[in-house]
Length: 393
Image (cartoon, rainbow, N blue to C red; front, top):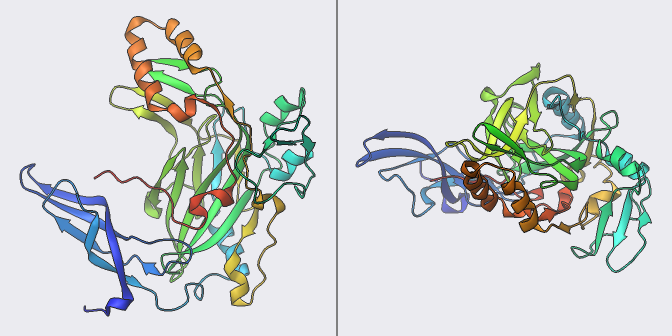
């Protein structure tokens, strides 16, 4: 139908839905998605698609428009009681690998164990209070960072504390308020080392991949029209993937299963091995997941840390923790002498595997340059925006 131009918005072509025909004369169907998405954006994904006769999309802007919500995007959002009902119904169960050494904990537990606050150009760190009230806000990157306690306590803290662990949940409108995103964050005190797979051989990369603190998340996208779970985003290192509700595994009832990779804690919808690299030749960083008796039920262990729209509905907004506004790194930045480490690894391998490892190391420069403490949830660009997905045209 014909819609007024002020009630529409620009769209882009994203993933291919279907392809038919020969390589010379293809017929492709692409998903259409709003160009502008985020907490306050009013564009609505109406399930549109676009057809092309090209394998690639040189211009990602679609001739098909999306709809625009002329009303307030918050008016159909869930109340505080409804948020708790949604978490009870859909809250994911995180399964950790049976051999996982670095489990999650609550942020409060980390502070209680003697976590330290370091300041640039200051010799002695300051011990953090249990509620994090002495964390600085609005500081520059690299000015402060959080460190583990001194001595033997550091090794104990690295292992985490599953009994204290909980999910930290952000609630926000998405796609013109037609959907509610429940962003479920999990905190790990430590991210473990990486393992490379070189065909049939696994190679430990030493302390490459290690860093203090690890923030991981999944996002549940729920329809405000029906209350049904539409799809779930699984964060995986620097990207992630959306999975439709019909393709998910469920731990019980409507509570989804999330499989956390050993050491690296990336989230996956199904157990098994996922290679971060070249799967065709079997070379990459291992992401191993498996079902186990070590799990976290977020439907029973969660804390709403942000639902800013609630006060607009006349409802009580949750109290945001002090640590949420800490803007610096949650761990130190430590540069490695990568050449020495790489040469040592290469020297331990047969000649036929050295080329594969060199190829792999070139693909992951950020992970191999040293330890880099992550920033907290509020510093991520998708705190106010949409999730990060790379589409291959």
